[in-house]
Length: 360
Ligand code: ATP
Image (cartoon, rainbow, N blue to C red; front, top):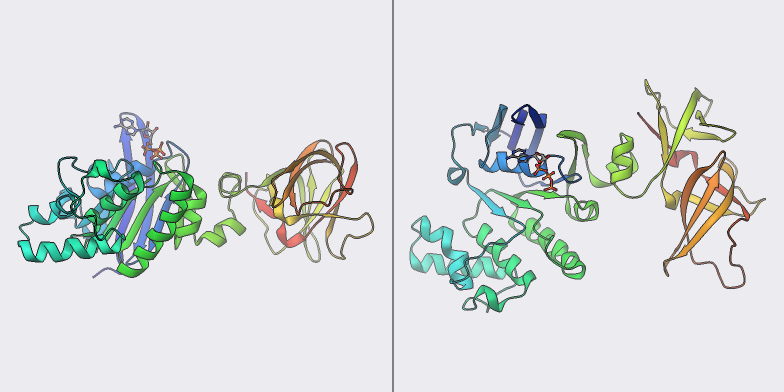
């Protein structure tokens, strides 16, 4: 028996001459919550559809629990599915909707009733059995769809942007609920989203896709702190990206010349990539300090303030360094009377360990 619930081996999908998923290798262990994350059109849904069996790979193999699925139809793969449009049957009650798959499998009535009740409890909809979909809010309908998917107790649940029709508050509440359901049921979840916050909030592992390939995969915090490329640094959270014209090793790590000069940034660590195109620094890692207050060992940057945006809990400062490179930094609200004015010079400090080298 394979240790992986799902394995994609060199999977490719082409439509005519165009390959929209290209030679993907992916292994998903049992019980993991994996998010496939990427911008519109990068191939997320195509990948999920191939796992579900709605679409066949042009090349490669998909294995579920160690068995090739090339000849296995969708209904035999023991997968649960939840999609963006919940697609409940409008003429059936909540209980009938949730029990639909079970009835198709010939599950006996008393047993079915118990399973439906348990699935509705899982999504906190006990007491809603006799309602019709039109009598439910969007969030409740999506929870019925979730209950319907988990009722047959599949080993894997595939979810394609299931929260995108809900408003922000409900989406955030549902994130926590989905994570809790995942932990309680111990099923493998494969979750497709273009929303990086959603993926960060729920996943054990994130697979970032770009143009039909996997750009990077790992635990959310690692991807955030160690983006492998410019694309990932920009897609996961906010990043300042600076073009690098020269790289040299130093006693403590390395030094980077920012294109156009005269800015030099020190970085920590042993990174020595074959090609260095850019470096990135997160906005929360750029500190505004007094002219004489740059802590020892930190990078010192002189900048011109362009704009201050007040978000209440924090302020966002846009500054320019060197020959016109823009940097954004986050700062706690500055007390009235000490307000900063666009055009003034400011001093910034950046810890070398917060500077990331990015390949081109
Ligand atoms: P979104 O977040 O917008 O849903 P996605 O990452 O899920 O995007 P896919 O739906 O997998 O992207 O589509 C990937 C690419 O494949 C797109 O360029 C799309 O136009 C193309 N594509 C998908 N299905 C077909 C098809 N049946 N025929 C031709 N091209 C297709």
